[in-house]
Length: 349
Image 1 (cartoon, rainbow, N blue to C red):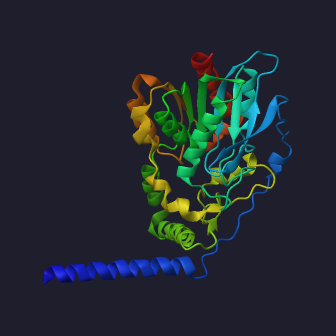
Image 2: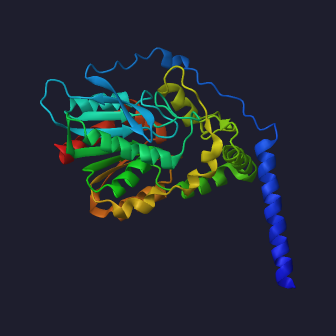
């Protein structure tokens, strides 16, 4: 009799949960005001980065979907060249602050391959602005296979470069591909679960539940074949966005190109905490440059120290007394890119 009541109670709870999901997915009133990124006055006077004369447009395919990429080749040097494959972090595109790195690597004698994920930038794929980690990992593997087939590239000397979210992607990709020569992980997100717990503490239960409901709405609508539910990628503090810290909003205003669409499908909110690249670190067989921003509030610093311990002698750890986004510009960029060039020279040349 008790067992029957337990089963009955579980059935009621499941039914209520299903009703809650349907209500969240179908009822109006969940729309989030867009947050347009306008260049701040102090950024308008900056001279734009001019593209390299050695840059070529490339295109490769993943399951029939065309992905856009740039290939930089060293000028006036014989090939085949060692190559660095680059992909951006959460919601980033190849024209959002990656070219300065690529040009520096190119001048140091490396080929560089920078690509846009499916659903973003100049790559194809619908719905637009879907941050779906399994798809992004497939894109990394496809980029690696494509680059190995280019006549200008030495397939035995290929490195992966990732930052923030893609800093975790390059660890996972290299764990699955022992032929990767080395990996550079800049302020990498290594443990989504740890980050989610820290975010919950900072945001509080009310705002956290509201964010979860946005994620539920988008995911259930995708199952039902309905239009996606989107939220801003970055927003001002206190607003609904994937990142709403002051440094994130200001950094995106500085880094993102004109016309950048500041939105993403909300389902990543309830899927990101399942992503834990740290679990793959023990399978890495190549050297890893692990760059840690000591004042980073967007990744788990504890997970980075744990990753370094797991990698052991394969890890080359560099610390910088800056925040997460400070590494993309100014002295933070100069320090990090010099360390990266030295690391690639050591392991690729």
